[in-house]
Image (cartoon, rainbow, N blue to C red; front, top):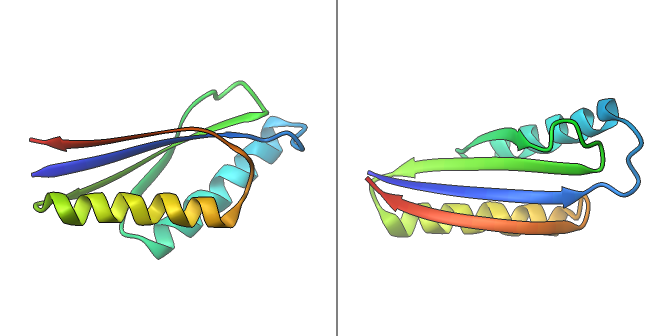
Length: 95
């Protein structure tokens, strides 16, 4: 089994409340889930209204498939330009 994880951090400079941050997170998560067969969750910076951290995970039995899937999700997020991306972290684990 191969597990691919992607952690993406955004800087929401135009955001002014946690409620607005949650709306952005929910919308982005929904779009990613509907386009790709992955799990998405807000994973950190829960009390910071200008930082959004999303965790995206996919599982498969082929490393190439998992790597391609994670790369496609990252390219999709980048092309949407929701906000400046502060950092990304990709891990592919063989279990």
